[in-house]
Length: 88
Ligand SMILES: [Zn+2]
Image: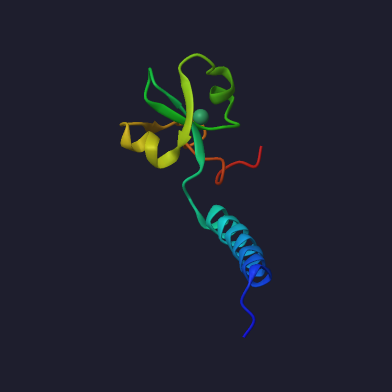
């Protein structure tokens, strides 16, 4: 058995790779995308929604779950998500 700094470094490298892989998997599988939440109207938009683009003063970019937690409702145009609906 060879313990030492080399083993520790290898373990760290493996951990980094694993962490990166896990992170990418989480992002790919996570439905909790970032949305533009309008703190005034309490509507949230897909970030590329035309209304999200226009909303520069009252909107904050937060996770979708956070927007819902704050009492947000999905925009009628984009449905609060970029992932479904029109490809435009
Ligand atoms: Zn919208």
